[in-house]
Each structure stands twice: as C-alpha cells, then as structure tokens.
Image (cartoon, rainbow, N blue to C red):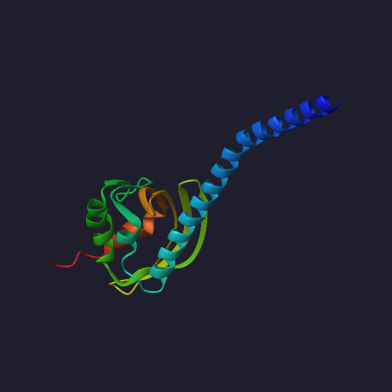
Length: 172
C-alpha cells in the first residue's frame, strides 16, 4: 500500500512539475510583455507631457535616427519619410517655421499593445498670420529600446496643408 501511495505521489509531483514547466514560461513572457507595454506607454506619455509643458525636443527624444514616418492621406504632405533628418527637414521644419506659437498637445489618450503605442491627441498653435491652428492626430509608434522606429500618423491634412500654402516660408 505504501508503494502504491508513493508511486501516486511521485506521479502527481511529476505531473505538477510538467504542468508548471509548460505554464511558467508563458506566465513570464506575459509579465515581460505587460512590462514592455507599460514602459513604452509611460515613455510616450512622459514625452508628450514634456512637449505640452513647453519642451521642444520631442522628435529627437522619441525617434530613432532611422525612423520611417508615414503620414497617411492624400494631401500634398502625405508620404513616407525615411530617417529623422528627412522627416524633420521636409515635414516638421517647413510647418513649424510658419507658426508664431508652436503646436502643443492639449489632450491625449494613450494605449499600448506589445511594441506598439497609439496616441490620439489634439494640438493647438497659432500661425504667423495670427490665425489659430488646431488639429486632431492619431500616431501609431512601433517602439524599440524606448524610441519609435516606425510611425504612422493620421491627421486632418486640410488645415495642415492650408498653413503650408497660406503662409510663405521665412527667408533663409
């Protein structure tokens, strides 16, 4: 009888060990993924908070040098920019140079899923002709080591392109 009980105990222990060895890696991976999502979400949220508070280094803080930034849509500003320098030189700087007050995020919602962070935000600024600028954005960041290496941007391109077309670029 003792032998049968011992065999049953060993079998139960072995079954538990096999079950744990199967489940434990999944639990660890799930925790690791949740930690990554939380860190990515916090990184993006904090960068937006600094920008909203007057910071001016959002793009250098958040983007890898080889970022691929895609502006979705059909307006003249839609397109794909390869590298942070190309994006800043061809998309950011021409727009910002036409503003007297820079765009600041005024509201935001942030979600994270794996290495993706989605931020929906509203921004306001003032163009050099005194006209207000406001727009709603949804940006999807693909993160690696606390920086975005791929971004897809959705916004209403009509007011964005209007600023670019209405206000001449400053003399160089």
